[in-house]
Image (cartoon, rainbow, N blue to C red; front, side, top):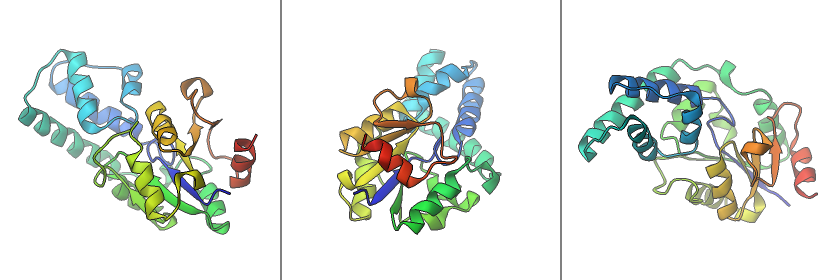
Amino acid sequence: MFQGCIFDLDGVIVDTAKYHFLAWRRLANTLGFDFDEAQNEKLKGVSRVESLNLILQWGGVEKTGQEKQILMDDKNAWYLEYIDEMTPKEILPGVIDFLTDLKQKNIKIGLGSASKNAGRILERIGLTGFFDTIVDGNQVTASKPDPEVFLKGAENMRLSPGDCIVFEDAEKGIEAAINGGFRAVGVGKKEQLPAAHLVIGGFQNVTFDDIVKNLKK
């Protein structure tokens, strides 16, 4: 019987991917090149360092370790400018109803995000109170597809991976969940998340019982 759910943040609870895109693109523009939304898909679920390395590769730009740190700090400052304007209106459809359903069923709720700003975002959108544990990029050293962020979330909730369902919108996140021994529910399109045990388009009109029933099929 499942006793816990662990959620990625970006693209699952709220769409902050657009703000990452704006900030990374702004950075690329300052370096004299641009990249598009298709390339941006490759940054989903990827750490800040890996994202920067990919972007520099696309632009054919080389930087020292110290220069990279300055660039990441610039990008993060711009990203924070964007997310500080966020409101609860940006919570994705059906999320609050689904979290409420979990609370009513005494299912533990965790967040497992690579973002170092996860707590700040949850505060802005008013969802902090729903979560029994919040594990973000400040508390883990390995990025997805390493399962560290989800394993730590399960441990904090005193549950085993087999007792938990992970909700993810990125291929690397699904891979991380499976690597950790969790059941993985993809949020998005089936063709983009082929390894997931189940894929849903979103949380609108979806209950915890619906998820459990479909996972058991």
